[in-house]
Image 1 (spheres, one colour):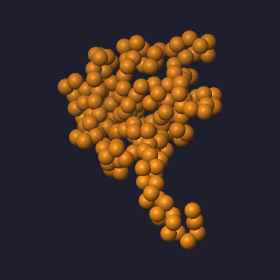
Image 2 (tube, helix red, strand yellow):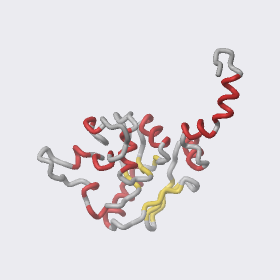
Image 3 (cartoon, one colour):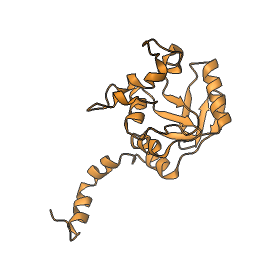
Length: 176
């Protein structure tokens, strides 16, 4: 549902943002449905509010990539599917959990005043919107990686290529 399969045939992830929730956002006739992403009041939003088990069935990188390409920088919800969570973290996009009541209160605040800024603070483990503030949580390893700028495993390998070569050079079954 996050990014329909017919849009997964791409060489790069560029342009995926325009297809985010495409089937929920448009009817069979191609006309827009009532959907938060079609609502001009919420254009430019950078934090997505979701419910429980978000990302379930979206194990490909394309799902979080489409969310990021649509301009979102963080996701706040009740819980996340494991693979989706990992793929999001690898993009540097935190998925933090709050209670069901907190999601409802945040959504109500944004609905009543669409220009409300929703802020995810990983250092303080809070999500705030206007005068509201809620504790949030994130798996410690992922949170630490984001806070320390070590969320990109490929980038870390490239940065540590000399150390990788040294270790590989000491392995009897590898030779360079």
